[in-house]
View 1 (cartoon, rainbow, N blue to C red):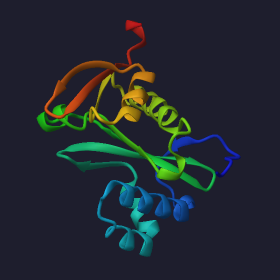
View 2 (cartoon, one colour):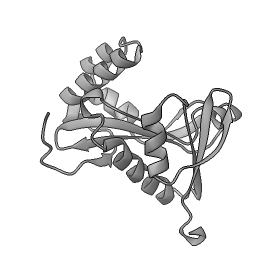
View 3 (spheres, one colour):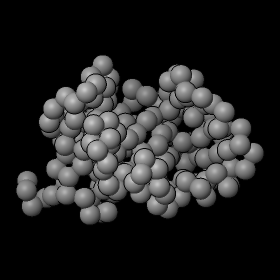
Length: 170
């Protein structure tokens, strides 16, 4: 296990974590059964890839922002904040999605990364956010609940949790 010498934090994607990002994303894709084909082009022009991840982008028919959870030269995971919800995202996806690279799992990073993401969502003006997860994903459920997630309902194959970000309502 690698000992981190700096406190992990959410940042805009950065080329300073090139090696650990590519290694971590490859491990995550393989562990999740996702295609790794995008990693070749990303590694060939990593600066260009990073630039394409910065700022407000558009996917899922909504604007979104991408953040990397990093500590020094170590990439630990990714968090995405979707600025709006479509009917599809209301059922599966929500406002925030995240993942931690396999080498950094089960160390509390997801809980801290989501907490930092909630602070960023609050800064962006959100009063509440929706997170969804598969009922079988106990680790994700625990992360969401640890960050104040209140189970709203099960819709389709997803659990829906709302997190209140408005300090006036607490």
